[in-house]
Image (cartoon, rainbow, N blue to C red; front, side, top):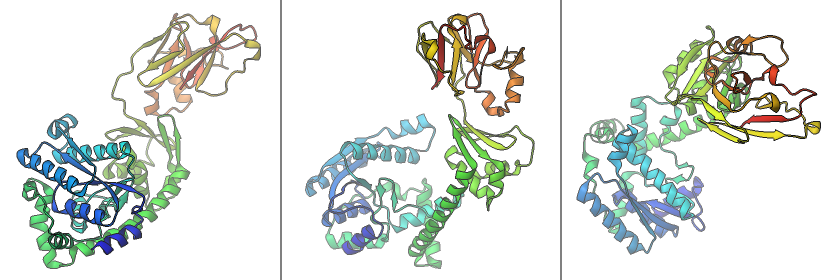
Length: 443
């Protein structure tokens, strides 16, 4: 089996056996004990990491003691962490299993970085691959779920993914290795165990080589996903425009793609939009502007020519003041930086919308930064007369979800000096007679 694993590592370019130090996740179970022994015998530079999730009482304590002794037996560095998994799950509103996964991988990465190790190795094998693919298919998934567990995902590597569970068991018996059995692996409470004990035996009656078949399917789907990924990347490069906290997707460009809903779903994946919502978005392409769609983290508005995506705001923007001489203001994630310029003769007015140049002697401090309100008006630079801010935003074709983020900077007398990021007020503009200039930059 050593030759098979060595070949698998080389074929998938997982790591360099001679130079790359590896952190091996060891629970004490059969799979991880085999992984540790195999990598040690292959001559890899190895350190051991064990997670105690505080879920199984004395059994978990015994697991930790077992892995500690195992690391000492091999003469390897040992790291252990004790988690309050149930408390974390309640705090985050997630399942205990998901909490344990998040905690362990976060900690693994912390250890890897601190100890300057190259990769984190886990003991997933072909049966794990089969179970993962079927669970994902049961819950509904795209190509990423159908290829299941990746052989290499960033700093995570799976050197045993080319082997079956029987291969690992035979190796363990031949080597006379000891391991710890986790009783929770038999609990029907967990969906994976229900699949393992009730569903997979039936499928293996239909196909005795189920794990090998699923592994081959995962490999082919992984290749298909790479083709799709490149197509989506090309489409996104043409359709997407990113600005500060805003992403624009051109609708006309998206409509020219093959399988538009699939392409859009892949583009929107980082923003958390589910497949049914994406189909509704595509269905709204020909409809009126202003239709809104929400994910847990973002809001998407169908505008005239674009889909406009912004983060969902979880806190209400308040009112903040900027005193005379104050050079920096941080307000609910928005940062303003000011600078006073006395040498007006050599001053050049910035062309960027993110910076306002104001006549410092026309300003009355303190300045106030606040959210715009219905009824607000100002005198847009370059125009004569008053204009309602709501009408100005319509003229500027500001999408609905971006209107909520518009801020105004007002003088102490209540006059709007600057619609932040959009337009300076005519009354505060820099003129030939200006003696001092205050620049305000949105960072």
